[in-house]
Length: 262
Image 1: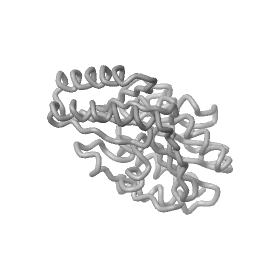
Image 2: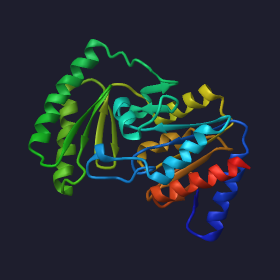
Image 3: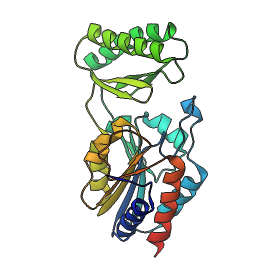
């Protein structure tokens, strides 16, 4: 892993971008929250940074070049906050929902999965009611307990109560802990699965993937030798490179546009 904080590290990342820019069929895949949009208290207010938006628009216009958002958000929510047009490829709900050329994949929950989600939802609603500042997000195959802005001790109690609730409901829930969110899903899919599907769909010869959260590590693990993985912010990572924040990601996307034009 390279940390792009010294001049040598920055040059190594620039050299890698130059090599990737020359690939015949380029795919740029990006997590949304904390990667191209700063983290905000109200997730519905998140938007792509203007510089990143401009760069992505340019990439979309280039031949043999695609970009995609890869997020844990539900598909409908992701479409709204990204303001993505129908040509933008989308991986939502950690790889469960996929939009390729304007179409979405039906997740098709069975009766047992729906019943277990409904039972867990009722229990998590009770936890939210007694935890001021927390929110419950309904996803196509799961639920997410948000605790951004909740005091640390109260958030920890809410998370533990949520885990107890999942055990009470029974069956298998896939648990994911992210930044100020604890998710429970009845289907197993990862961002790595989503990236592999995108690669096959566009027959990409090279890929850039950037993300800031622990759930993005599955994406970094799915990258090949000639791809570029970029960790945004702090934390252990499998990514080859690291940058500080979404502003730095926007700058890298602008660099990639210039390099791709050449």
